Amino acid sequence: MATPPEAGPSALRFAAAASWQVVRGRCVEHFPRVLEFLRSLRIAAPGLVRYRHHERLCMGLKAKVVVELIQQGRPWAQVLNALHHHFPESGPVVRDPKATKQDLRKVLEAQETFCQEVKHLAEAPVDLVSRVQELEQEYGEPFLDAMEKLFFEYLCQLEKALPALQTQQLQDVVSWMQPGVSIATSSVLSQYAVDMGWPLPECSVNDS
Image 1 (cartoon, one colour):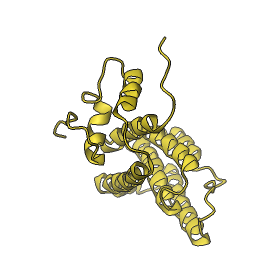
Image 2: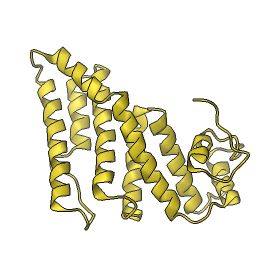
Image 3: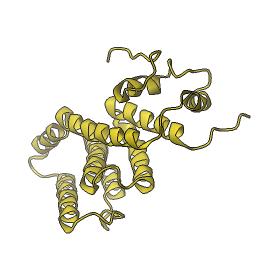
Image 4: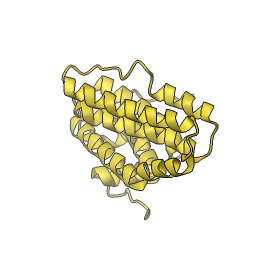
């Protein structure tokens, strides 16, 4: 069995590209993977973006996961389990020494407001249908556009922090993750390469 390439800039770029594909494609069921990537990235490079930028993005993705379950008509027990998983009552874990008290307060208030709203819906109020419709509108396409923009800004900062792109190293990662696929034909990398302005003339992207 082939030895996986060492974890490094190329592997990180591939992971970033995979997460970008999920967010651009609105694949809400895979948002937890993006959240895991963001958690790992925050630990490895906490200074890429401000605390509130990171938390706003993460909270938005988590909220969309919960709202998606509501839209799909899932049992409220499942919705509340997801809510408690993504928004534990202990509140957000802060590892950023630069986070101000105002930052922490705003993040906590936003989280509490969302959680209370979902819990209220779970209690089946009289206006349940209209409230759910309002929630769907609030977390609809304009909201996802905003999350995509926040994530793009995050990824741009990551790209600036990484060393120059090494095509062969990236190809090694692609070959391991997608056997028989080249950088030019990788569906994971195609859009990311264009959006990040990589010097890969052979990379093209289909209209989307």
